[in-house]
Image (cartoon, rainbow, N blue to C red; front, side, top):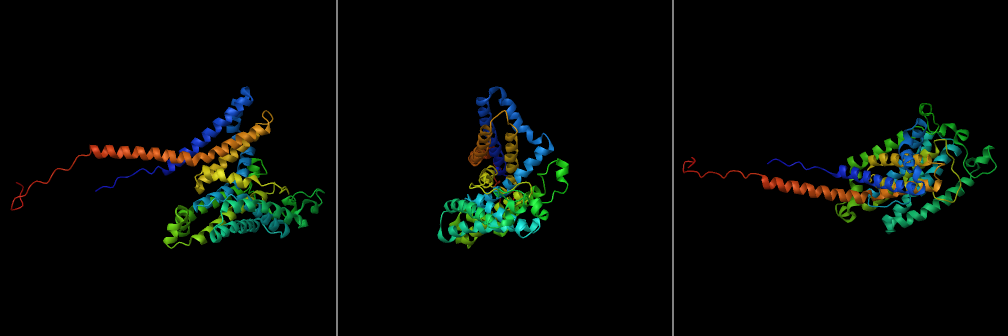
Length: 388
């Protein structure tokens, strides 16, 4: 009997759901532009969709902003695979930033060791809610939110207690509300550019975007091709069943949060070790960690999809910035927010598309079964085995 080949619609439904969410978000954004300035609405939409590719400098900014989004998106997506919601990526991102800058400025380490330090910092901060969840069954959402704020104040306090990490130590300012320019403090801690800055005529671009993409591929291999990845996903599907099968669910929860935290910490390291930004001691949560949530949802927690969704969201942000001064900043923020958070409905759209494909495939199979010809009956045999 020949096996029927069934069409696997999972990838197609994922793509369709993501595209559908993007179209809905752009449509709502266009309506907002239309209400604000009807004569400029179409120009604004075109500006959002085309400015990122208008010149190399703008595209370099897209890549620069996509680096932390890829890492925080991977952080949230990896936790999703274990059935966990890591809303603490922004705290892990902040602690990773401190560890990376501390290693690069205070210890004068090169960029690759500073990145490792950033990952270690994020992993340590991610392990805390993981341990609380695994050993004490404390909801990870509650602990993650609490440790976001603890991270902000602890990192600010730590920065201010190390004079080398404050800008006025270097004689550049008397304000002392931010870290020094990394190129002045330790040029070896700045991520290499390998000529990309000259190619794109921008100081923002460096090898960080390639490192983020490589990490995304490694996470995909880890989840799809290793025993550890299988155990992680098994815990996410059904924790009780995985424990019955001999999988140590508690250990995997802790490991999952540590890896998730390390990815978020890497995002902070890549962003601030680029040498173009300075960490400012503000009492606010950094948005990069929260933006990783819609990145993961839009990608359906697929590591390769996270790369695409992060680049798209970064592209939209650059396009939104280009609308000024014709549109006030608040309008741009609302448009970007709508596009990002409507993307969270990609999972709902995916389920709808999957149901649609299942119904169609079942109908097609039913029609084929009805039209199939029955095999001819066996002819009766005589005593000698000849046909009668």
